[in-house]
Image 1 (cartoon, helix red, strand yellow):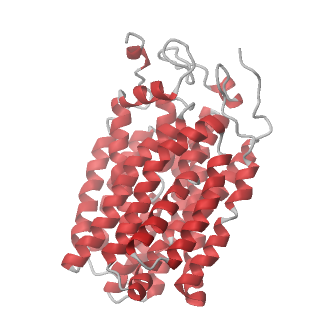
Image 2 (cartoon, one colour):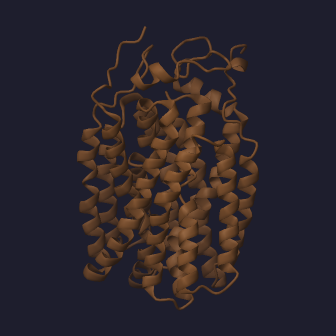
Amino acid sequence: MNPGPRNASLSIFQLLACGALIVTLSMGIRHGFGLWLQPICLERGWSRETYSLAMAVQNLMWGVAGPLVGWWADRQGATRPVLLGALLYPLGLLGMSLASTTWQLMATTGVLIGVAQACSTYAVVYGAIGRHVPAEQRSWAMGITAAAGSFGQFLMVPVSSTLIGWQGWQGALWSLALVALSLAPLAWLLRHDRPATGHGVAPALTATHQTDRRTGAHPNRGPNGEPLHAGLALREAFSHPSYLLLTAGYFVCGFQLAFIGVHLPSYLKDHALPPGVATTGLALIGLFNIFGSYFVGWLGQRVRKAWILAGIYALRGVVMLAFISQPPTALSVGLFAACMGFLWLSTVPPTNAIVAQMLGVRFLSMLGALVFLSHQMGSFLGVWTAGKLYDHTGSYQVVWWAAIALSFGAALLNLPVRETETPRSRLQAV
């Protein structure tokens, strides 16, 4: 018997508005970190590999902390994790501005900001959306949130560039630390997000997703009807071939986005393009991904999401190949940014919607974060490898070709993903 709609005071509008603003701020700040690569390296006397390694550690910590933060959010709601992010993000930005040794840079820019991002981005917010939004609207709602993250990039990259010009790179980080504190009141507005425990389920689920149509299993229960616990959810996920394929493909997404986001400004400067071209390019990526994320979220309600993901990865490979085939110009950078921006975070809504569709929403934050861990392992390699190879070869060309090859590989990995298959029937016999 269900205990009733305990979460009724958290409306879908409030959830989406707060979730979108949280992702806007958190993702918007991080998308501008490539603008600090050269100023910090020049003043501190560090190589590009050193800064790249700090960014790589940040991405890895985001991924490693994600499943733990997701498990916490699945048990107690989104508010406490986001509040922790509102504390760690400003501390990390302040530490980044004051770091004078490489280990200080790794600890602040890498560890503190990485954990803060795990607390204040997609895994936590999407878990809350999964608990409160009906299944038939979930892809659309996740698309709105991903689009908000893109708006944050469109908004914050020019702001970061302007702050660096006005206040210097250190003063700009102090200003962003103040901006990051605004995550706290947004977290408080989500305080009514209380995941169901025991035999209760969130109100949105009671009317829309009671049982798996193929097996009769409840999305928030174990194979024999018992309340689903984290261990069983993990066992179920890792016995699901499509979940593993989805996870492997997401590695490529992280590799590409981290490499381009951090190293594109330096790549363009190496080709004698003015700094404003890089700022405009990063902002255009954010602008066009607003449309891409929303469109893909809408499309995911009508077309198989695995096919959408395969198409996104294949198109990324084509766009990157066209971009590096000629020396970059202001026009080609704009076209590249617009096309890549449309495909940038558009992988996020279908990936998380597939996880929810395959495995239910009770532990969506944790299971989505495990897929995202693969994404961040790719991010680690994409950022660090690019910096290391540049210091050794003086070029990013090898990394571009690796990103292109991986893109077509990810497209092939996503084609056989089955969105409705569930191993619950197999586990019943175990």
